[in-house]
Image (tube, rainbow, N blue to C red; front, side):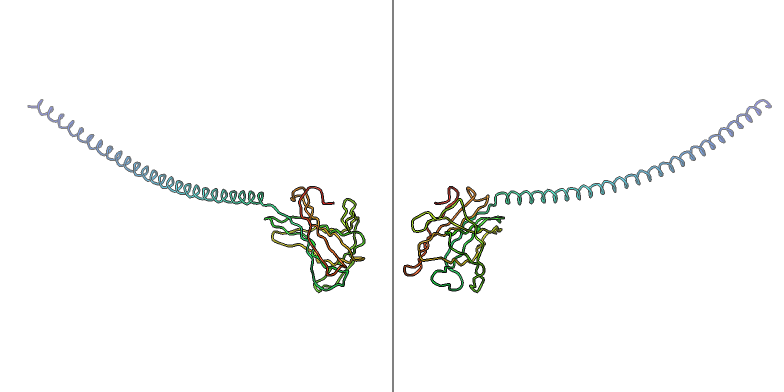
Length: 247
């Protein structure tokens, strides 16, 4: 029938259109899917690059942190070593002892006597500018001795107004000379001297050391020398620290 033929034709056309639209939709969806896939791949690559950069930065930060920690530990060790050395230095002290001995190079006659006068340091730190005084009764002359025992001098002597020595049991004005020296630990800092006496008799000789690390500021050694009554005789009569110098 003519009407039925038209209806069938129209229906067939709509089916074709629908199929065409469906194909176009499929193409659009495929294109969209492809774009999404490309974008996803790009985003994934960017994420991977970002992750790689983050991992690299983390590794660099870890290395820097380790280096800083090592440097900090090294600096801390240096500070500890310096502090330990400082504390050890603070606890180190010089300990000055006077030296007064008979004997020395050469021979010098009946009224000439060689002595060694000075100081030694039995402590653990150098004592700087130790003043060493050698004292003799007024009238005695002092010469320096070289290594061969030859007398050089005489040494210029100064009156010691605060000090008297004994001679034949009576107070006797003294003279002396001083030197300021650094005395290292374990070192004997002594002068070889020749004492020239005006006449036989009994004489006191003294060595006195002054330094701020000595208890009371000073220490001394005193000896008695007998000349003219047989062989020379010498004995040390006193050693001391601080207090009054023996009169």
